[in-house]
Image 1 (cartoon, rainbow, N blue to C red):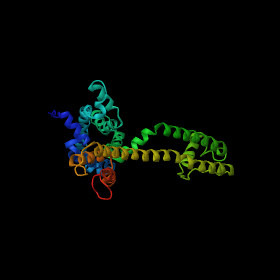
Image 2 (cartoon, helix red, strand yellow; image 1 turned 180 degrees about the horizontal axis):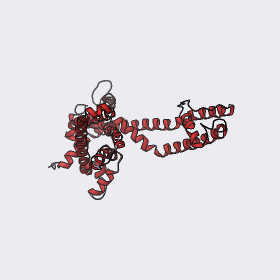
Image 3 (cartoon, rainbow, N blue to C red; image 1 turned 180 degrees about the vertical axis):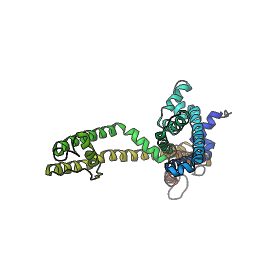
Image 4 (spheres, rainbow, N blue to C red; image 1 turned 120 degrees about the vertical axis):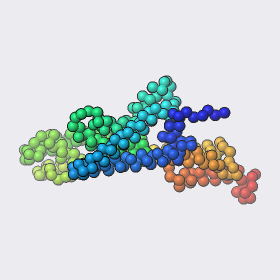
Length: 322
């Protein structure tokens, strides 16, 4: 006899969209995504003084309702996180599990989404800059977008390599600033009068933006600028290449995880006339949504594994079991 799930387990399943809460979890994600987008649009429009003054009450009500919803979501996630497989496996008390969750990237993003507004309501000061910080609420989409989660995972997996790449870029930036300062500061003291001032030109050149408001005019300065421009093409490509390869690797891992799950269901389970039953397909569809795979590639993986399995059970010539 199976134990009836507790309220906390039901909430955890709802947020994860697992089990019988797959559809309800999907609808909840859509509703929260819509609320986030409404908030972002409202914050942008609110920056127009005339509109902000005319619709002050409407913006205030929207903010109060949004903070209340996001706050309840945050508290509910902290409360139910101990029943998520990732944190349930941690040895120790529920307090330790919740602390582990609180310092996770997605939990920090959830806190940032409500913290500026809470400070505006609590602290009786002119905290206008906090209104702009409310735009960070858009990062909550990371929780509901599989592509954003892949990108975040790519950043985390390549963190040390990206740090090394940006460290090299910082060294090149300093060298470029010092070089152009030595060459151009006597000719253009208003633009290259100091190394910090020369860093604007170095940054614009290294990032290949090339604003053109500060440019070298001496022959040696132009030659130096050309070398830095050529060097910057390779420098910018390093972090881009690292992220692209890591993103591709994360996608490959997710596809492999789904294929392994399909293989386990087919070869480890019981097939009905050479096909998956409804329970198996439901489990695989739930996993597909969790991994962010589309139905086309999921069905292709299932079909490939089924054909491979059935070809071993039936004769290719007569179609009968050997």
